[in-house]
Length: 412
Image 1 (tube, rainbow, N blue to C red):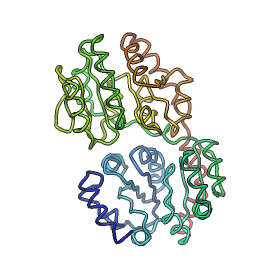
Image 2 (cartoon, rainbow, N blue to C red):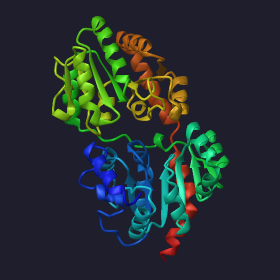
Image 3 (cartoon, rainbow, N blue to C red):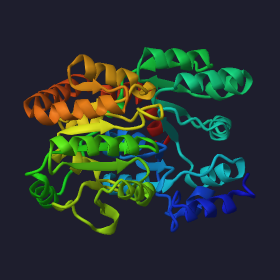
Image 4 (cartoon, one colour):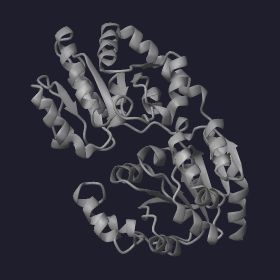
């Protein structure tokens, strides 16, 4: 794979899935000088996983560790780099090929490695084990689908999961899957995403956006995937008959799809503006596509009604914790297995509403726009719910204490 990696990455650069300036980091080549002293390496594949690591990063920096944070996507790299504290730095993770991994590990020489959620690279895990570098999976989860795939490859699963020194799971169901796959030390510490601090928002930009949309009925569809935008356009067309001046914000999960989404909307006769083109949600805009990274916090803060994508036409769901922290009433489809317990928690608290199809989505959005007091009530319930379940970062740090003590002891 290492021989083919440059061609593969060049192709990904051309389609917008790799950073064109820093893609050599994906080949295991460092873009920064390694600082002297002990280094803790944390990896989160994409934006959500990496942001959930921020509470731990802050604590490691306070303990005077050097902190390397790696991710695998350009959007995550841009956002996480801007939010890291002094003493922590970002690189892109190498592809999971032995030669590239050895190059990465030979240079950075981490004293402790933490992988977030379900990011399990067989070659990397086996190489870390061979080097006797402790590996801990934090905020660990593994879907039923992935669990069954690993069960089929039971031989490699035993080797991979048996090489994990400590697994700190989000809940007991995920913990049980890790145990059955061969992980030896598995504990439940909760979901770190509840502890992730809300991002700072530019007050001037927030004020400008609020003024632009204040007089209009508005809702947002966030982290959408192919097939869902068509249902959102159906909803918009139906709703604009009842709510003149309606504006719908769309934040695609993959920003590079913005132009394609705009093309579909225009075929429906809708007026579209794209954030990536520098456009603003003016009075004539029906659909505003926020197709740049790092915009969701601004939208959650200014728009009280949000549909979370990857839940209607495709499965898995997207993380609803950030909109809950901002007090949004949350809508979601039936396919949210990756975040099922979070959605169940919000639904039981009266903070989230499930919609099973496009017609239900249209009807539910219409109801909330007609009854804004109910929308605000659900938003308050969302804030109260997430505040009650924080604390995973403290439990995680307690579990990590022996490993951190050992790393610091070696430095003496």
